[in-house]
Length: 521
Ligand SMILES: *Cc1c(COP(=O)(O)O)cnc(C)c1O
Image (cartoon, rainbow, N blue to C red; front, side, top):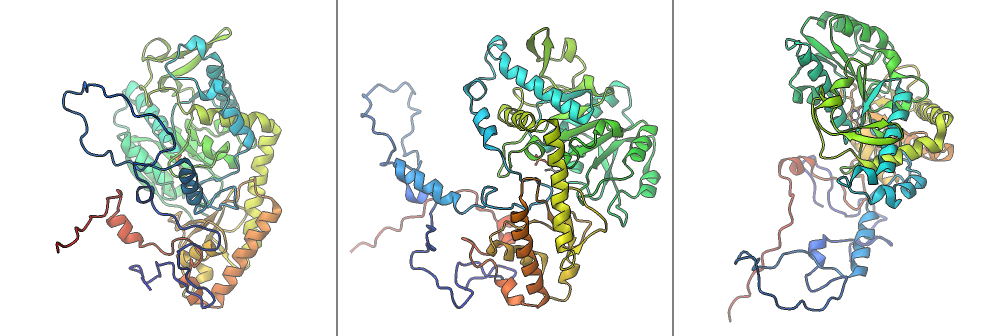
């Protein structure tokens, strides 16, 4: 059997005596599938067009001489290829997707229906503004909901992801400091439990970072924070609820301390789904905060998109917001596109056009179909579900911190001590049980971390099934069934990948196998 560098099986061979490998590589009704380049050829096509007339080339000898190398497939081949691939993926429509710090929540079908309406889906960003007033109204209306929910005076809509929103907020802070002649302020405080994007963003915006430790309650260590204050502090980047799934209970004092040295308070609001309708970040003294529309306001993300990271800004920062932005004059909407007039203090433009229209449409649909009472209920249910999981597993797994959690439950690996089973083994065994693993080894402040976020959209039945699977695994680990865990996953299309090899020597491009010419007679 082939093994990876940590001695775990990689090949799809039976680990368990009752299993056997099929001749075809197919399993049950699941078809093995090759890469599209391996199955397609240019002779096949989904359409049947007549040979084009011979025309004289106008490319001046620059035309391609060799094959273009694209795979050609018939329509049914194409359908089967992608459906087979889709069956190898785990999906939120299949079951609980417990990834913490990611909020993979149900995306209501209504969102999709509205996002596909031609007036939203088929407009072009360069169309005359008079012809897209409805789409502009949607952006304006969504901004209004966001400002109301956050209690903030302004929002920049163009950032296209959470990390992009962080960049927007930190660039606004940088522009404000520069406008005020505060160029000695370049140090940004970042708690060690911060999402990895936070320090990266601060550095990208020309700041340097200074880490603050967490205390034994998983919150910012206030004494350490006070010791770090100084005139060169530009601000703090803090996640709330933090990456341990906990509310930063000293947040108002943190805001006051940062403001007392002339710094700005950036809050990472990716986890706003634990607060919507209950807490307004504007009331906490926050100066800038991004929202992940693709987490808090539905549409599970992953694999690169789609995302949208609108960033709310305080009175102090709002004039520095990026262009373009929508302004309402009477009953008409217009874009401020340049650094002049209302946009004169803007730090500039971060995207070619106006932001992620498809996400805006889904987010506003989600907000309006829930209503303000429904949004608050979603928050409460998300927190309740996470606490239900924490409480139901706390006798067999070890919660990292005491007390109630917010929207995600964090466990450490104490319960695996002396069992020979690691967090990674445990996660791989979850795949065989039919679940995508939770977030592992993050946050780094907790040893062997397992971060589980159920979201509000899971029913009690689904949660109970998930909890039963987790309990079963925890008990099996305690019984030291090490072989079972080290062999997992047995039922996945791929077993343990050699992650070190994959990171060091990634194969990013398919190359045609070299044809070995047959030996001459
Ligand atoms: C997801 C997340 C981000 C980054 O958001 P992207 O849209 O993936 O760029 C930042 N901070 C926290 C706390 C997050 O959970």
